[in-house]
View 1: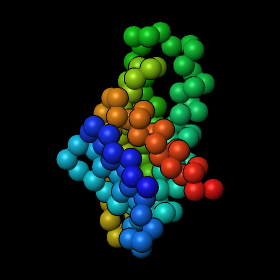
View 2: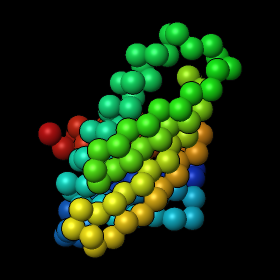
View 3: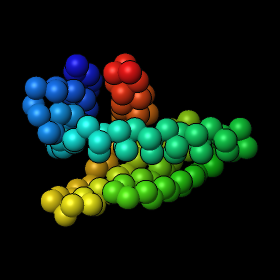
Length: 123
């Protein structure tokens, strides 16, 4: 399964073995294991839940920052109630690799929904 839009791409290919999910934005990409992708999916749901809880209380021009840390991930959402970016830090629990990702506005919202749809279509 491939989702390829202007500025980002998302790929699921179980034939690749251990690192079967790819997320790419602009000029970089990272491959994730199924368990890493699942933990990212869960945290994206959680941060989306948080923004939905406060969204009606925010003015359109009001800036927000939401952070979640659940190893191996740290996620930071920054922006306004209807447009935001996401920054991620991944610290490998088995100390094999670490990385950071940044999804700018409007890529962050599009990629969030595509990751959600991709994971949920596997059930």
